[in-house]
Image (cartoon, rainbow, N blue to C red):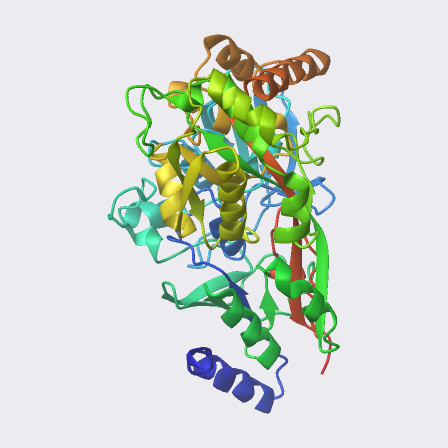
Length: 530
């Protein structure tokens, strides 16, 4: 198989290390897709973030149970000024080129992540100033008292300022075009692994960084990582079964049972901090991908309600997801602050009522629309879309599934070039404001709304969302979060389908538990002796 030839160099290297008596463990890691770029601020997708956590690091990290822990910052606190957070940096940290981490790198990285081509500018919208106090102290000033700023920094990677400037990469890559910068295919982080080679859509190899500050504090038993994007689920699982890969992160639901039955493998399972949903374009005067001309059927609340009544979430859970999902009525899972069980309800399918609503809205015979869908990102994503298309057909809506790789799909959503789409969203801050900032706030206003492809815009709701970044009273803030969720639930411009359950499959020598953020930190992975 092609995978074996791709890995030959790595296997030879591992053999040579073993012959010299050195302990070396190479882990071959397979996923369904490859990051479009290595630029740490260009894309906000789990595929990118998880890979880049091996080479770059944030100021603050989050444990699997949701607690914050030191990263490149050892301590943080609100200063005498309630709008200023102060971070103390870890001394002696080296970048992969040997440069020493300083406050200047942190200031540069946050400023870089706030620029127009950054996927993180929405997250950093409350930040008005970043300043160096001394070599190991940074202050971040926000537009008002911000209770959750450290929570927003867990995936915000720090780059070496001199390196980026020296390679004309001061701005993040604009992934909406074809332009690249030096950071697209190169890196200079502080993480436990450094880049050896990069072959997009084929393999990426990392080796352990000998100057890593965390030596002696974390296991570091994995000395080499070979990242293999394998789009085909069947090929991905076959490679695991044959021993050609060691770890598969994206396991199809239909393969979980047989992998669990294999004594040579280990399967771990858990609920992800992610909800899979359908987005409906409510803002356009006319839909681009529909046969209805001169008006927008999705702007009618009756049509949106009809769509919701047509979908059988329990059938999705049993028939498509093989029981590996939790039906959802809200676009956030239980991990996130602001989640309320009372919101997490959904209607029973009612085809007759859905047809009546469509007829009342002026579409007695339904209409045609394109359902855009990723085919290599979420568990059984294309199969979910096919099932949704079938549900809608029962009420006369002809939803044509257009499946595409997640890189293309995410770009289309970022450009609002879709009317009806499947997507998944997590809240790495573990706070509802993250969801509102990206998905609900008016697109482009105050740097927010970058993933709002539905065209929803409400000035009153925008004001409430913005206030979450400056409200210092926790009770008032929680009341505002509740109010915003009430609006989101009432409007129905997002149709939640399910909270995603994850399964990881691996050779027995590994034991990698499912992380709610679907994040892997190979520096913490222990490898059983042969």
